[in-house]
Length: 374
Ligand SMILES: *Cc1c(COP(=O)(O)O)cnc(C)c1O
Image 1 (tube, rainbow, N blue to C red):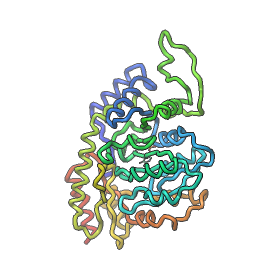
Image 2 (cartoon, protein in one colour; image 1 turned 135 degrees about the vertical axis):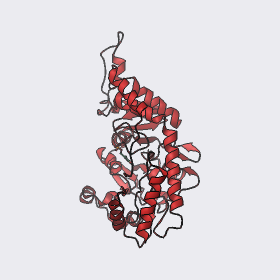
Image 3 (tube, helix red, strand yellow; image 1 turned 90 degrees about the vertical axis):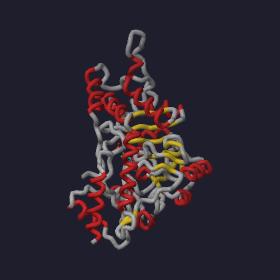
């Protein structure tokens, strides 16, 4: 029983086959169709699809054109792609400790880390629960910082009644198979800013100023101009067709995830082993992952091995960034500076959660938890 898994339907496969039989395998009409469907779902103006969530993060940072030596504040309890995207751009990641209840970056810790070099905040909606966005926006306004929201967990989440994708300057999505919808690999950057959007469209295509489709046809010219140092981070039409078809079922995916999370919550009510995740009342959780907190006297690694031995694909999200060799070797960051991340990391466990799980699957996981309790 894996912690996350895609759900590919016969219709999804049909849509992909149609593209394979057509003229455009990449840079074709499915790309725009996907971007328009996402804009409609999120209610934002623009989006740029790219080859992965990591590529989306890298280009998001690049598109801000921050000055050399700029610092970007982010969370240590995330996937390494977040701080890596700052490094790819030759900038400096600075870590701010988390809120021990939501595991999201703590705005007051962000404020403590601001220096004259700070130019942006890259925050992550952990597990699918939006961060303290109003507080982060206030800090950004006060110190003239840009905001990037890593919403790889949070497609369909809401903050104060509004969908994620409408708050930060740039919002990043991933379509890896464990995420809400998949395109195999894939990612996207959402924005309401047309300047950033134009730049992102160039950056994903070598920094070239015209989309490939515009260069075909009887009246098109061969001319193009490379204006920025971009990459080839394009999504293919094959992938976009899968993503479009998946996005049609996002409502169902979100509903099932939320229902399964409630079943876990109910099963763990009164548990002496762990407590259910804390959800703030003013936001809608997208439930990418279900991460309860083990009680202090439980050995997480022992519990992890026990669950794996029972065939339950538990996981840990995440090993804090500063514990990885690369970061330890290249940055002077002491884990003593992140007491909350340290404590939470020792006590978190990700339980299986994906839309093809049944009520019985949830019960089986809950039974195994109870077995360990005894
Ligand atoms: C999945 C994920 C990424 C990276 O996305 P890929 O599509 O795998 O490159 C980045 N940040 C977070 C929080 C993620 O969950």
